[in-house]
Image (cartoon, rainbow, N blue to C red; front, side):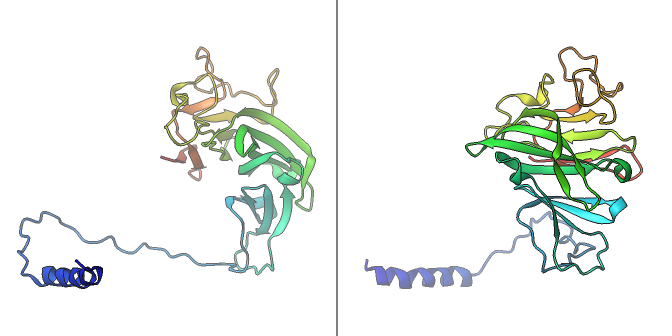
Length: 264
């Protein structure tokens, strides 16, 4: 059959099928209605300000600033007052400038007593040949003008790298630091290292540490009430385990209740 004739017949067949009498569907058991519109809408506050792969936004309350981190290591500052009209975001740090093998910055948080000790904690990875090989949590200082001081870096802990790194960090109301770690492996096949049930390392866990004191041989302290501190062969930092990639978490205001989004 000539190709041109086929092109003419196909639309005709669809038209005939659509116009044919259809038998009513009377066995429908579906009830309800479409979901109502959400009770909120999004609004661009500063449409002239953009970021490249921004992965974290943190309120630095004592300074009344928002700190935004990009995946490739740049940190920016903006006023926390959404009625302000800044011309641009202020660059306050660039990890790639002094960590040449930087993989990605996944999260940051400020010490609860930042007004007095000006400590900032950053979760980042280092890479080799385009693949993350190590995850780090480092402590930095910021000066009075909110500029990161590169030479102040102190690496608190390290673990493996991989496709699922987690990387979110928050202080609880008691001043203890919680850190999320993924299974440190690519997404497929899932948890190929069986890290989810292995407590001998930090993969697939939420860790909980005390940054205001040091235990022997560590740059931090282990809280005495961590749940697996006496468990044979378990890392004492572990607060919870069995995650795939605990990407973002927060504390419900006024409580110790954690809400966490686990990828997959």
